[in-house]
Image (tube, rainbow, N blue to C red; front, top):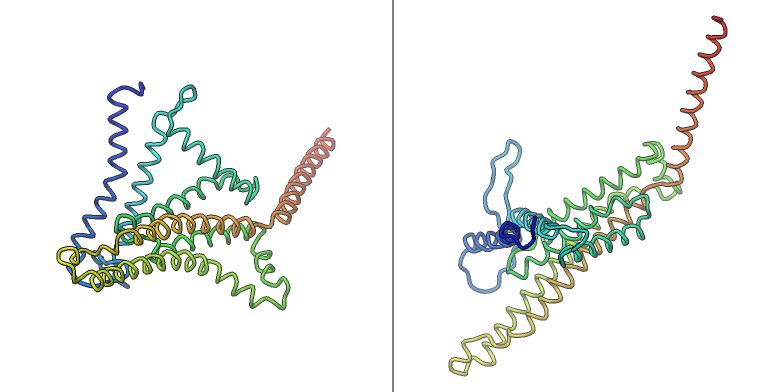
Length: 312
C-alpha cells in the first residue's frame, strides 16, 4: 500500500479518531453522571448502573468503564504505530515502537533471564495499561488505578502466574517451599498471601494519594485566593492563586508518579515471577524425565529385539 495514498491516510485518521473517541466518551459520561455541587468532593469511582445478579448485584463503575476505554485507546495506538511497517523505509512511528520493544525486551532479559524472554509483551502491556490509566487524571477523569478493584485484579493475575511457575516442579515441591526453614513456615505462608495485597495496595495507594493531595491543594488555593484578593473588584472573582502550582503538582502526581508506579508494578511482576521459578530443580526434573523416557524406549527396543531372536 502506498503511504501517500488516500486510503493509507484515511486509515491513519480513523485510528487516531479511535484513540481519542474513548477519552471523549469518558468525559461525556462524567459530565452526564456528575451532579452539580459546591465545595470539595473526594469520592471513589461513581456507579453508573447496576446489573441484577442472583447472589449479589454487579455495579458498573466509572473505574470499569474508564479501564475498558483505556484498553480501546491503547489497541488503536498499537494499530496506528504498526500501520505501514516497512523494512526499507520505516516511518518515524515504526522507529519509536521498535525502540520501545527493544527497551522492554532488554529490561525483561536483564531482570528475568532468557528463560522468560517471552514475557516482554505481557510486561509492555502492564506498563502501557497502568501508565495510560493514571494519565486519565490529566483530563479530569477518574483514573482506574485509583480503584483497588482494578489494581487488585492485576495483582491476582500476577499472583496466578507466580503460583503457576512455583508448581512447575510439582505440588510437593511447592508445599515444601513453605517449610524452608521449617521454623519460618507461618511467616512463609503469610508472605505468600501478602504478595498480591502489597502489589495492589502499593500501586493503588500511591496513585490515590497523589489525586487527593492535588485536589486538596487546588481547593485550598481557591479559598486562599478568595481570602487575599477577594476585596479587589473583578480580579477577586478569579482564583488567581490556582495558576501555576496545581499544574506543577499535576505534572508530578499524574505524569511522573503515574509512570513511576507503572514501572514499579512491572518490575515487581518480573521479580516475583522469575524468583518463584525453581530453575535448577526444574532442570533436574526435566533431565530425569528425559532419562526415564530414553531408558523406557531402550527397554522396549531390547525387548522387541529379544522377541525377534526367539522367533528366529
